[in-house]
Figure 1 (tube, rainbow, N blue to C red):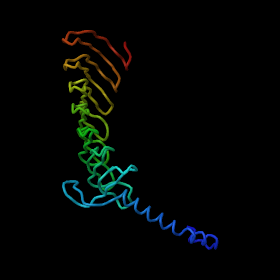
Figure 2 (cartoon, rainbow, N blue to C red):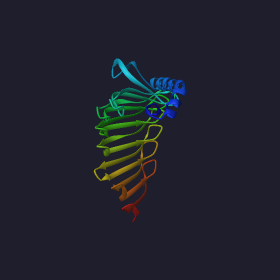
Figure 3 (cartoon, rainbow, N blue to C red):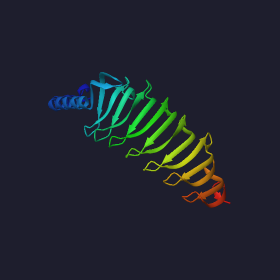
Figure 4 (cartoon, helix red, strand yellow):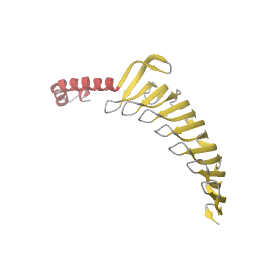
Length: 219
C-alpha cells in the first residue's frame, strides 16, 4: 500500500524495506502453495488432479475440488482425522451441498456411519456404529428429521431401544431391552413424552409393573 503513496517518506520506507517485502511475498507464496496443493490422486473411482488441503499442523485435512470462489468443496471429497486416517467421504454438488451416500469413520479406521443426503439434508436410511464395530443405531430420516422405526443398540450389539417417529416426533409404542434382547419396558409415547401404559418386565419375561403416564407425568 505504501508503494502507491505520493509521500517521499513513504517511498523511502518502501525502498529501505524492499528486501523484507520480497522475502515476505516469497514465504507467503510458499505457505499458500503448501496449504493448497493440486496433484493427481484417486478419488471418485478415477485418478485425476485434485486439491489437497492441509491444516495448520501441516496434516492432510481434505482431498477434493473447490469452487471458483474457493468457498465450498464440490464433487467427490474425502476428509481426514489428525492421525491421517479417513474421517468422511462423499460427494458435494456444485453448491457445496452433500448429496447421496456419505460414510464416516472412527479414528481407529472402523466405519462410524453410513448416511444419505439430498440437497444437504439427511434423507434416507442411516446406520451408525461404535468404534468396536458393533451397531449403535439405525433408522430413516426425511428432510433431516427421523421417520419410521429408530433402533438403538448397546456396545455389545444387542438391541437396547426401539422408537417410532412421525412428523410430530416419537409417537406410539416404544420398547427398552435387556442385554439378552428381551423387553424390559413397553412404553407408549406422544410427541416424545411418555403417554399411556408403561409395562415393566423381568429378564425372564414375567411382568414386573404396570402404570400410566399422561404427557410425561405419572398418573
